[in-house]
Length: 131
Image (cartoon, rainbow, N blue to C red; front, side, top):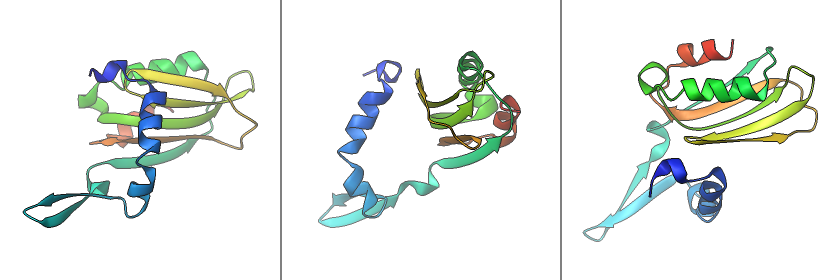
């Protein structure tokens, strides 16, 4: 399966089935030689949340995530979510996975915020895109 063809909804639906297992300890395990080995995934991914006062439109958000494809400059981004007030004063939220970004109108928020999950994130370079 090519990851570029997987939609955000397909990933969310697949993960909904695994939520309870992950919630119980955020650990995955496998049995090797009759012993259970667990691997905590938290050390493999960075999570970064930030707020900004700048307003954006959908086109600008799409352009930012096109630029974020440059893994050498920004790191490898596997998931992002955010809430923004656009340049016309309307609130919306976005959900991003590589190859797919969706937008949805959002009831009035209080601040523009973004959460990014990935590995080897260059927070300084990413923050410049949202400045």
